Image 1 (cartoon, rainbow, N blue to C red):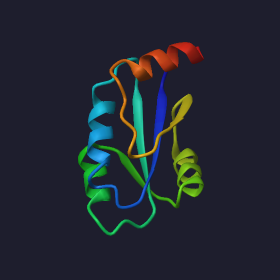
Image 2 (cartoon, helix red, strand yellow):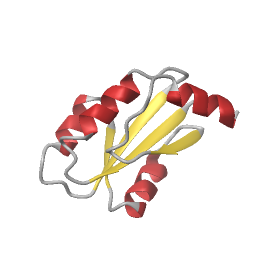
Image 3 (cartoon, helix red, strand yellow):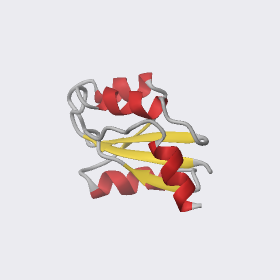
Length: 99
């Protein structure tokens, strides 16, 4: 099952890499990552791009979620905050439950 992971963000250069690393170590299908940036003044956008995430203009937090959802292509939308940590197999297990 393909999923789009949508992360609203504002000045998250310290936390975002940890979440993106966690996502990179997930299994269970195609994962599209979308970072909806609310005008960060730090390196949030650069970091998201380095992880090959799609970066869109967003807002905090509902507007960012909506902006990400508008461009998402996955069958399932997963909304995460930038300070979330994911255990291994989290997304695989969650997507299996949704099936």
